[in-house]
Amino acid sequence: MSFNDLWIAEGEECRHAIVTIENNMVQHLYKVVAEQKVIVIGNLPNAVELDRNAMGRLPMHEHLLFTEVLTLEEGFTEDVQAYLQPLRDRNKAESCLLYLIRLAWDQSARSLDHSWETISNEFKSFQGGKVLGLYRAVGQQRALVIVDFETVTDINRFTNISCLQLSSVERVWALRDYHIFAEDVWKYFRV
Image (cartoon, rainbow, N blue to C red; front, top):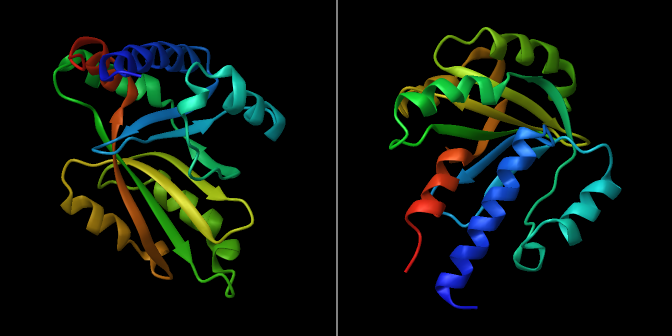
């Protein structure tokens, strides 16, 4: 496949991805900054449907590599599309940049089991940024948090809030709003 053919196929995948957002098949869909990865928090009824979509229904399924698939328990989710729309309208040239923070607790202590409700409540009322989603990885002592911060300094403040004292930050991903990424693909990524 030529480079140009790849971007044409990527453009088709972007069209399909936008339809999945509009049809509420996914709650979150983001392009990871500077990586050939997307992060999807889906809304499929079961693992069989995930397998069917991943292995055959997605337009570029033969080119996709799933590096990690987690079953998530939702703590809470804001209406992310409604939240991002005014940001998209205000300045389409600038990407709506969010962050996905992966937190971990000591597996043997099972402290997340006891503090999940407290963490969820504290994140809902957090004032140093907008928490858009909180998810717990089922069967693990891990959580994923999607947050909109004004500055990267706010990430350090966030990870030091009292309910996270027994956790560690495993990874922070910078995420682009998928709609803005798709527009870039359609407009700019051609030879």
